[in-house]
Each structure stands twice: as C-alpha cells, then as structure tokens.
Length: 285
DNA sequence: AGGCTCCTGTTC
DNA sequence: GAACAGGAGCCT
Image 1 (spheres, chains in turn green, yellow, brown):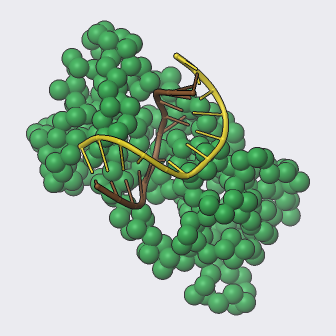
Image 2 (tube, chains in turn orange, blue, purple):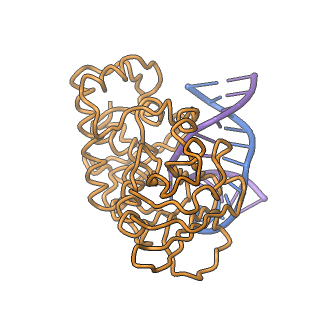
C-alpha cells in the first residue's frame, strides 16, 4: 500500500505524537511480523524516541542513546525500521486500548509529561515487517544496503545513468527499490503518464530529454501527493487515522477504460512487470 | 522477465 | 468462487 508519499505522511504525523517519548514496553503479537535479523523488541524498553524519519518506503524510528550504562552498547538497537508493505498502519491509541485482531506489534510509550499512550503496528495482510537494529544489523540487511537513491534528492545525470544501464521495461525499473527507493505501482503509473512514456519501453532507450522529463514528472507527482497527505485507496491511513486526498488527482491509476484526461481516448489496462498498469496508448510513447 | 508465495478482505 | 489489491522475495 504505502509508497513514498504515504510513508512520508505517516512519519510527519507520527513524529509529534511519539518524539521524546520513553518506550516502556514493546511486544510482538505475530512472530512473522518481526524481521529475522531483528533484535527482540524487549531490547527497546527503557529507550527514548529521538525522531521519526523515512528512507524509501521504510518508516524509521530513531532512538536516543541509552540513558544509563546498563545496556551493553554493542547489543543496543538505535533504530526501529517498519515496512508497511500493503496494509500496514502505525497509529497511536489511548492507554488501555486492547490490540485488534490485526495488531502485530504493541509499543507502550510515556510522554515527557508522564502521560501514557500506545503505538500499534496493525497489518491486515501481515506482509509488513518491523526490525529493531544496531547499525551492524542494518548493514547486514540486503534490502537496506541495496536501497537505491531517494527520488526527490536525485540529480538528472545520476537518474539518466541509472536508466541507461537497465534493459528492462521502464515501469519495472521504477518499481525496483535497488534502482530508486520509494516508488510503487501508483506513482510509477502516474509519473509515466505525466512524462508521456510507455511503461513497456526499455529504460535504456530514453533520450536525455525524455530522461529529464521522467525525473521531473516523478518529483512533481511525489511532491503533489505529499502535499495532499498521500493516496488512500482502501487501507492507507496516516498516524492520526486520517485518509490522504491524492487519489482524487489520479490521471491513470485505477482508471482503466475511463477517458484519458489529456486526449479523451479510453485508457488501457495492461500488465507490466507482473503489475496492473494503466496507460494511454495515444499519449504515452 | 514471468510466475508463485506470503496473507486477508473486498468486489465482481 | 474467482479475481484482485499500495510489496517484495524466491524460483525457474
């Protein structure tokens, strides 16, 4: 579900609710939701949340160094990474709120004012993962180590070089987290439409001008979505439980058979890289 | 590159 | 009932 704009929105809405909070307890309710490389969540107890951030589609909870010297430094996590995959949610609840049937992890927090609150990781389809990590564990995680650059920070030359080296379809390349981090099915389709490029086209076949155009479209679509707090198709909610609004601005995603906003001809629904793909045969070449 | 898998819920 | 869903890893 959540792609870069949604995870960014979760980070922004979660931060004010948990920053500076002390983690009094943390528990996994479904063992499969804990990444195999993760430290036990009990190692988070007694730690303070320094900040909340994002890298690609990963939500990052940064921990302040341990208060006392009790915990040996080398075994203490400094980060909790959460991948929401398709249906994951992070939301804060009142103390005493019981876990729901899809709650996978529970974090009991105490604010600097002494108030208690509960952070739940809910995930209906249970594809999501949490990982409590030291810097060493993080570096041992292939997905993290191989994560491509942030699309909003990448330059034209770097982007062109990434595309030039790939013989796969444009859409497959955009979805590959090792090439660029954070793009999923929605924003791949939307940016390819905005750039007027056929998703099936070989990535290495783009002219320099087309490559620049695609990067500009990608950045524009991502920024516009972030400004609208992301897209809520079904499950996505931010950390306040609120929906996004960018689904109202989709040009192609979920609009197969409907009229192209540019030329009025019917949009085509095809399959590219194993994913449902909507594009305009007339406007995208 | 394409197909199958992990899950559960919704829609056709 | 079958198909499908914001992801990604594994297998030919």
